[in-house]
Amino acid sequence: MQSNVARQEPISRETHSADEELMRRDADADAGMPEQANPLSVRVFDSIEASEALWRGLEKAAVLTPYQRYDWIKALLDTRGLGKARCAVAAIHAGERPIALFPFEISRRFGVRSAGIIGADIGNAGWLVMEPGAAARLTPAALASIFSDIGKQAGGLDMVCLMNQPESWLGLPNPLLELAHQPAPDHLYVAPIGPGGASERLNGKRLRNIQRGRRRLEEAMGPVVLRRAESIADIERVHATFLEQRGARFAQMGVRNIFAEAWFVDFFKHAATTSLGSDRPALRFHALYAGDEIVATSCGTCAGTHYSQYINSTAAGPAAKYSLMGILMHDLVAELAGMGITSIDMGLGDFDYKADWTDKQVVFDSVIPVTAAGSIAARLVLGLRRLKRAIKQNDKLFGTLKRLRAMTLNRKGEEAPATPGSEESE
Image (cartoon, rainbow, N blue to C red; front, side):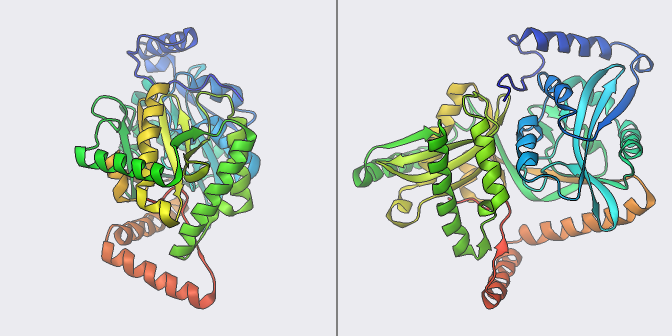
């Protein structure tokens, strides 16, 4: 695994590698030239391996979320694969130089060929891999031409689905939101780390509660410490505990533990083990120990100076009364700050405890038709997403839906699937 991963600092940062400096100078030089001298073009790769060198090279100076990182998507494809979909990694060039990349998969949806970000169904943020200077060139007209070219090279495309897009990422406005868009069903929780950020936003009362919980937990169970999983044995133990704790939580809710499915188990293990030794892991487990017992876990991923807490779990029983997630997050944020991480997100989904550390942000869905058939399907997809948002953002409606679902499932003896990253424990 490559450890020299993407840098996402603003272009004015004074310290970066020589390679990044050269790429930024190239971008600045291109930005100062007429567009006719550097026309945009698209090259579509039909496998992730074929795009690796270009993708990794672009990441060095790009803005991206952890869910468009090569190592995250490669681990997912190595374990889950694409099923009936096909890979279409689309690299956008200005002249001869790549400036952006869409890691697409193309599948059939509502009878049409639909492109979406690989792994979007389990990710927390839709974006692309993009040099900062590329945003200005990705106008609606340019994107329409790009999506049309992708379809021609990939054997046909009717619509492009870009879900859960932030308005901006690390200070860079999202050029894709120049296209038609609407609010997504869930919110994303994001904040800086540092002055005024996640590490300083707890009020005195909340901080005292966490400190009191830590003291009482130590008195009851022994020393409390947050540890990274830094060996295969660590990974196996923390992962097993996560599955047990998360499974118990989902059982109470009447939903299936998707994280216990074979492909998800393999994905987590593969991504975590191939990340061992990296200071910017594609996936890393943390465990909160009280004495010798793991009382809470956290699973997260990095890209550059951003960390995404993907999912967490807490123990049931007597330990649960000691503000376990508050203690874990307090120690985790401090560790991340020491690593040079400058921002954090806590994923999609509205849970009160996230507001202690991060800010709620609206994210957006875009479904861009490429053909007439795509226009019809796009309206259907967007209508279903609006309905989902209307239910999820209304406490009464969402509560009623969950009760009806639980009653139905109990009668059938079944469980509903959970949504990765959106059902976390306090």
